[in-house]
Length: 138
Ligand code: HEC
Image (cartoon, rainbow, N blue to C red; front, side):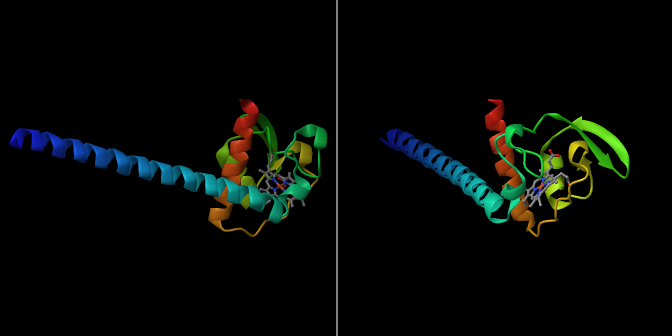
């Protein structure tokens, strides 16, 4: 009798643990989704979309298209010197925070205004851009 009660308690504990873990993960998941949505909205409301297309080079606007840049090789100019590297998340984030730090060679004569965004907003936009870039790789 005591033995089966113990097993019962064990089962209940496991059940509780699994439920809590599932809940925590589902919260994290939906929080990520909310932030991506926020990034997507900011991209239009802050004005990024007026200069950046998300449909590739065929719709080239004033700035580079941003939907297929992640992992591609780029050439930039920084302090009058040329550098070449693969585009990663850091580069994308830095390009948003400090557009004058370095410029893609192909767009060196065009100027991106420094947006006034909180760090959280920049994170959301960066994650949104990463997410659509991942989609275009798949
Ligand atoms: C007035 C037009 C304009 C606006 C508005 C603008 N950008 Fe830009 N953006 C550019 C130009 C031009 C470049 C390339 C030259 C440079 O980096 O200054 C660029 C570069 C970038 C790059 C680097 C892309 C690459 O391939 O190297 C990213 C990322 C970026 N912008 C994101 C954004 C985001 C996000 C916003 C909105 C918060 C934004 N831009 C608003 C014109 C703009």
